[in-house]
Length: 191
Image 1 (cartoon, helix red, strand yellow):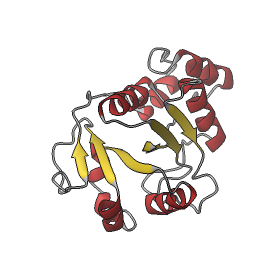
Image 2 (image 1 turned 90 degrees about the horizontal axis):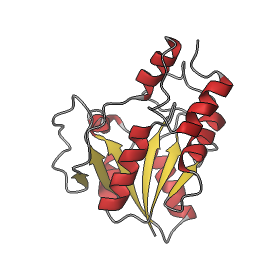
Image 3 (image 1 turned 120 degrees about the vertical axis):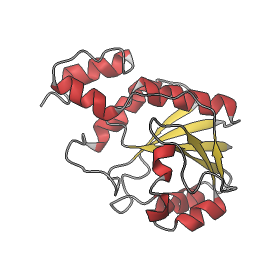
Image 4 (image 1 turned 90 degrees about the vertical axis):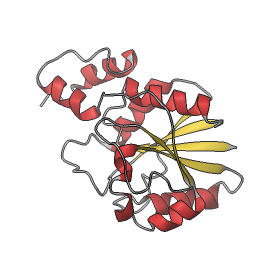
């Protein structure tokens, strides 16, 4: 089975994440995309991060019962901060018959050389890179393991959504409807 691993904080998951995942699955011959909720990205502050299980629940709500997508808590029980190479090693051992491909925004390539064992990742995995606003070129763009894909440029960010909710703005069309209901019901990001 060909699995795309879409790592992220998903704080919250929004329509941009879903549109990119849908585009990548449809145009890159992947059987499934797993949204891998990262409890602690070593490059991001944990200050405004919702609890892991809330972010995972929002992905469950967003993807519903689609067989093409899966919400994954695989990193919840791995050492923190989460390192992609450790997760990939774990997944390779657990699912030896699956072929895993990483899905990254082009902004992640800017610091890719700071990732633990990034050379090992480049040697053993294919990486699909979708465009992000403001990122033109990186030194990894022409690496044979990296495929820059012609996906739509999505200019929505989770941080924009969080800040807007804090300012009492209505973000109901930026996230899936049931995710919006969950955010409102739980009073997420209001303070």
